Amino acid sequence: MSQYTSTSGTILQIQWQNSAPAQAGCGLMLTLQTLDQGIVNILVDGSTYIPDNHPLQTGEQITCFYSLLAPVPLIYPPQYHAVVVVPTPAGTSAALDTFNRLPSGNQLTNSDDTLRLNISGTTKKILPNGQPFGGVLSGKMLLVIYTASTRSIPAQTSPEQIIVFCK
Image (cartoon, rainbow, N blue to C red; front, side):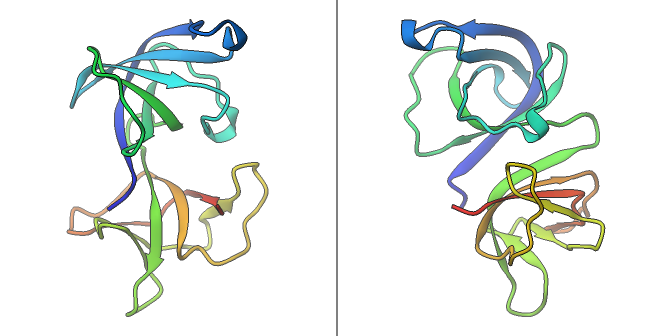
């Protein structure tokens, strides 16, 4: 099972996070309208990875990943500290998990075997800093961005982009 989970929704509001004087202006609080949880607040700071340093905007569809192991204040609406925020316009999906090679072939599967990757020659494999990745994907934390998947169990996809987190 992955140590990260996600929520997806539309950004309703973006506010500067000014909770600590030393950190004033260094973080954003996103208010999302989600289908699964209703209104959710997402804290985005300098440690949050956003592909291509994409500037977030009100009205945009995003998927936010946060740690299941991180403390969460017991407040409403729920508030999570995002480790990754991915713009996911209609038809785009994202997954953050450790992927391992299946013993029977060259496919990669996530930790709970709900998503299998069919890596093609057109799949862009990069590091978080945008540099190309040339190593083995198996056993690494991967941010997988894809547009189509099968309806099978597990779902299979040929991702457009894979961002490899080596640590």
